[in-house]
Image 1 (cartoon, one colour):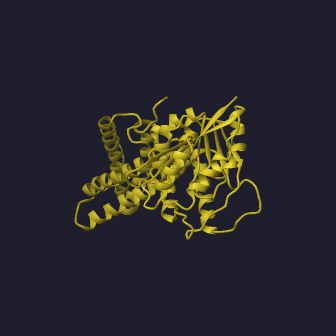
Image 2 (cartoon, helix red, strand yellow):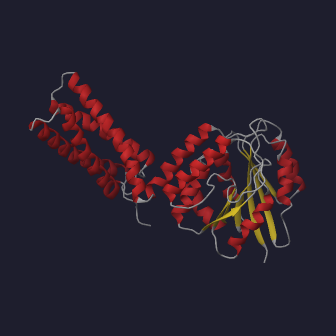
Image 3 (tube, rainbow, N blue to C red):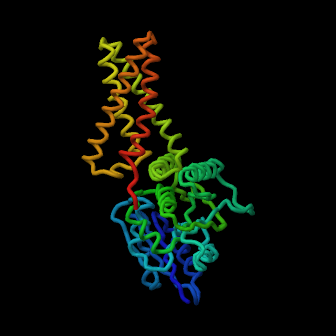
Length: 364
């Protein structure tokens, strides 16, 4: 039975490599495998688009799309996904780092029904390889480890370009994708994990290029990838990971709470007013950290309902914090330590209320 593989190729300033890339992709077509090649030019400033125009005239299986302004790899992939019609959808960089022939063994677990998604891993097997950047490899493996902790997947290469999907799986996920640049990798990995589909890995080769040769990803993308791991994976992460992350958020919020309390006392405010004001300052800080990296905004309620429920919960925990702190001061505990234990009480209550009431995941 003939199957069609749609390969999406994001292209930005790759005039030197794009023609060879397309040629190598075309070479994997066979009697049983048709190709749909979708190249998305991301507003290249070199001659990439002109080269692609010539290729599309020569080869009917090539579709060329373009962005009017540079948006990033993730945006180019999303554009390509809209137009993909094949049975399976894969991603191919426009350079020479990856070998398209690797898609043949990657297709096998999809064709026999074992897998819905296959990751091509650069780290599954020891082999003769080009040695380049230690810190780039270390960053990839560290991000993969962090991603696995929150997605509960056991993969070896989350940052790989080579990801193969059943079309119905990726097109169901596609409308929820938001990342414009290299954040696509941790975002789509998180959403694959949340979909509950069957995931496999397949060993692939890798021929990395240097920055002098045109490599574009950098350390800022690594930091953003870490944020994406937290932002997209944490809401459905295993409970121990959510608690660990909330410990960090709680610690930072408690530090803001206590700093505000000390500053207000030093400014001449009475303890009762300082407790209330400091609590609300810490609560606002906590809320924005929660919706940035741990819980989904409007997961259960509308925006207004979420706000109302949050304010009520803050008032309840503020009352508890107030009573605990004043009570401990009343038994001659120092203001600092009284506030510390009041804030700890608030932390525990906040996590329980936020996770189980305000930001509770909607049932699918």
